[in-house]
Image (cartoon, rainbow, N blue to C red; front, side):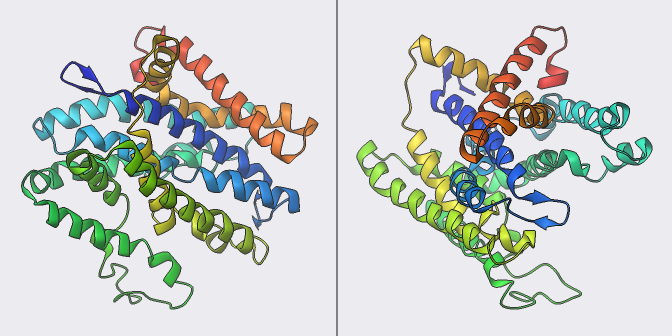
Length: 354
């Protein structure tokens, strides 16, 4: 979070906002996620889940961009980079993966083989701790950063723009799949289509670097460009979910516009990042707690599913859909901040919450 001795203030605000967005997204899932499909609990839920969850889909890409803004290109050798990332990311991830695997079995909330749940961690997250998919993806991003860093150091602005243009084209891939079985050279023996190596979260890494290196817009120009990006992306993101959830219960179809590497979410992410980059408010009354929460954001992300279910059971039965989502999400976020603060006071807390 630092360049030399100067702290980059907007990244602290960005991490806090993105972390809150993630919690709110998961608070919405109680109203449409079931074991048999994406079955919305009612028309009221369909509306508010579409509007709220759709507004926060840029949460994960914002996390990727926040991490990438300072990490690429690397300023250290690869071994130093991996060593620092390992202690910061992997060990807390392993601790919480084990907790999510073990605690539900011990408490009896989930039936299953403890051995199977622990060994599952070797290749993916358990179904009830699905939010940890993000860490597997993030580790993959870290592995490729030393590979792309030399390219980013020498590529021209136009070269970077060409990469981003091809990546943006790849964000339409998911919308083509319902129209055709295979896209851009895919066949049943080859799942790696023509734009595969330009697709996915690596685009957000390059986008963060491009914005840092080349974008120096005034606030007025940023607002003129960023707001239409956000609004247009939001209309597609929320609107398609609302329509699709009334037509099907298939998760892939219902959540088609919610995938993090779709063009509409990419537009929302770019617009939000550009706007938040102008935040430079450092008055202690606000920035001091924001900075602290930002430093705890990884721990908040890791633990929030534990608290979320409890808050849903405790709060939601007394409220209608909209206030329930807002109350459950907010209470979970605040609760995770409190727990993370307590853990941060323990010796060796960095191995638990990063």
